[in-house]
Image 1 (spheres, rainbow, N blue to C red):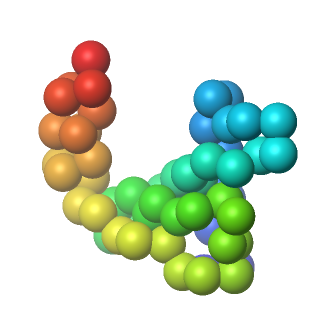
Image 2 (spheres, helix red, strand yellow):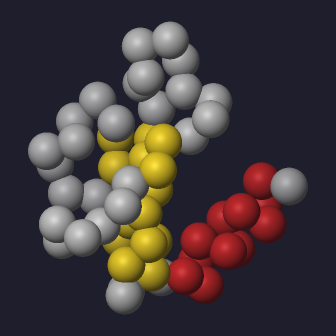
Image 3 (spheres, rainbow, N blue to C red):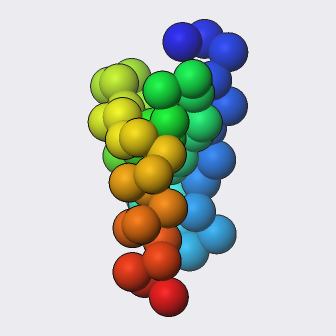
Length: 56
């Protein structure tokens, strides 16, 4: 998992606390930016797209 490129939300606060997302072969990974040493939660790409549609 060292090749995973995490991206932090543009809505992060001044201290940088937010969620980060990354793409991998299984779908989308999500993690807490305050604890980057912890693994991300993995979601299938279809579930992530449905989540984003719900937000809009």
